Length: 91
Image (cartoon, rainbow, N blue to C red; front, side):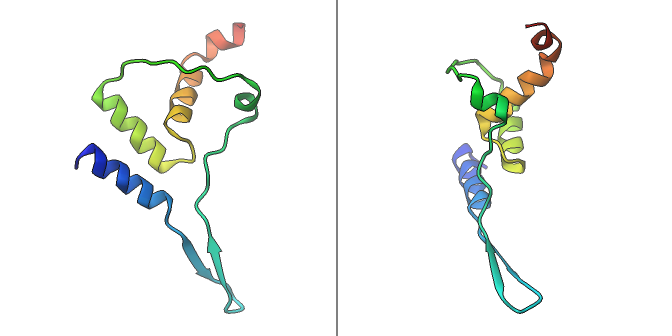
């Protein structure tokens, strides 16, 4: 699967609207969830940076993005917070 096909598949999965029938025979439509930032991300100023990633890391980030509620930047920020937790506590 090409990267473009992979991205399109992720977009299709995220934009799928789900319809449920309630007990009283009424339909309820659920919209897909949007990415949610935590309180600390909302108060911290985000600065754009560029880093080089291997193909495996990029694929892992894409998969994690498809499975969760965060965008790619959010996935990378969360991973870095976990990896650097001991240093972040000192700052």
